[in-house]
Image (tube, rainbow over all chains, first blue to last red; front, top):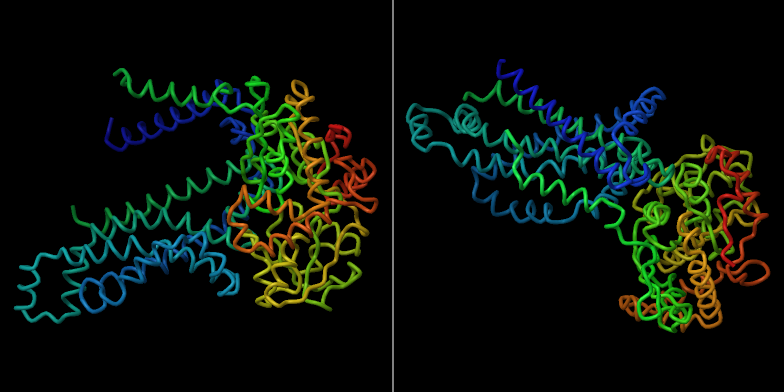
Length: 250
Length: 330
């Protein structure tokens, strides 16, 4: 059996074990569906939500927020991370604000951002980008600073400009660390989209969770939304890993 | 390869933790003559829960043989946990009881706390239509498409011959729709008559309200209990409801005493005692109906009328009749 097949086999076994434990918890705990629905109940509810179009509609909105939020957050974070690494002044000026912004609970700030930015897609993308920003910016800064000084010196002696030094050496050599930040950031983007929807939105998986939980008292539907978010998170994480494998020489 | 012992032990612990015996029961074996019971409240500790604090402090619960422990949960979880028998009683919206009962959660409404429906449409003075038909084209802020606010809004729109398609809805899931009104983002908001109007007026914004009582009567929040609890401990539920109604009557007669009791339980209330007193006075007004305080009695005529409204609006499918949603404790 090849490495790929072994990996898939392990993942399938792990999923099966998770589902068996989940089912056991509901059976041994004698838990009703409104406390913890069994996996087959969630699956059945998921099929109905897909057939009715409910799941697709909400998932589409959340996917758009994740993609835009991650794109805005990651690109800003990488640019900021490079600036932080290369300029002591920029680091001294910006670092306290970046750390403070990270320390403020986004759940408290999100409703205000929603009001300040008009409550539309822009506000939700900004909230998502804000959550994504910190780990990628810090990873980029650390990665760029880890550049081999001898290689940098060699490029300079060959007449490389500061721009060439950054694009040809520092960023490529920082890629493994930057991708570490991107891996964290992309999973946070999923959380960011839901937090943004909880601050103010009329559709999206976060909204579906609220409607299922507080409006319909439909716990299985809430789990369908949670499972969908988990699958989205895994898919985006996989895409980042795939990109990393292509761009980073091992 | 055999799984490591530690993994098996962890699994056993997880399964044991999930067993019914591990959950905190709604009522436990009497100790020292008192039965330990749990009351679940939604929202957060605040002055509107003064009757529960007063009943504890004045010994109304202990006189009824109860040692009441108060816990705060999210409103939907109050219904789920009470339905599962993990608490003796909880407080929930009557409209939520109708929806949750229909979706299979075995809870019943046992005693009325609010004789008037607490949700209203609120707007700046002079900008609130007196006829629901005047809502057409308005932008309305509401927490979301759930809960008593959403039900009340739809009932008002229906009374005006409108639907949600005739208005613009802006959602504020963090319940900060009053900020949206103050900021000028919406024309009107749904809100609690004992909360948002007072908050807005404290910011210097004079408001008007469109209440639902005379237009499409809905029952207000009340005490709920699970089916299993009502089978095994109906006497405890009745004793709790009676003691609470007694404390409510005390607070209606003397709101200052209610604030004092709430201050003991929630010391932060002292930060703005006047505001707390205003909230409690407004809350006590909602406990009383047209003929005064009803001591927890359930108005079944209003329940049946509301049931029909909820059914016509599509919140419930009518599979569970209203009589199965209510079990008067008195």
